Image 1 (spheres, rainbow, N blue to C red):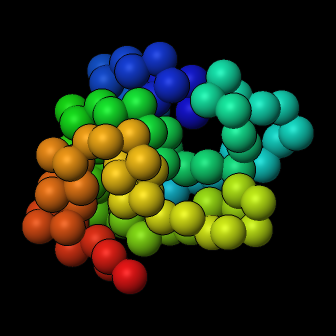
Image 2: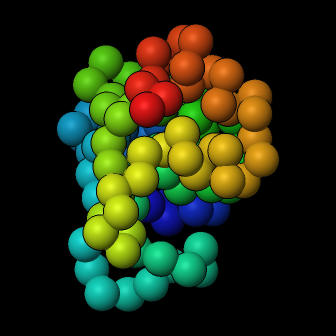
Length: 104
């Protein structure tokens, strides 16, 4: 989580090389991130931070769930919501066109 929060693509690559299943991991600890919430995936964070490089890397991972819902306030938002909310339409386009993210 910290590697994505810190926008360290090389560290994200290293972590996922060692543990590919971590791509869909969600932090369920009680601590809140500087982003103002918890219970989010790596892709949610990268979309929120508008980091297209990390989003593209995560989106290229074989087992990525681009429609994974978070647990924020019981609303279950997907990464595409975070990309729209942050105003990163380039990321929205990538998620829809390349990753086939569900827009509903």
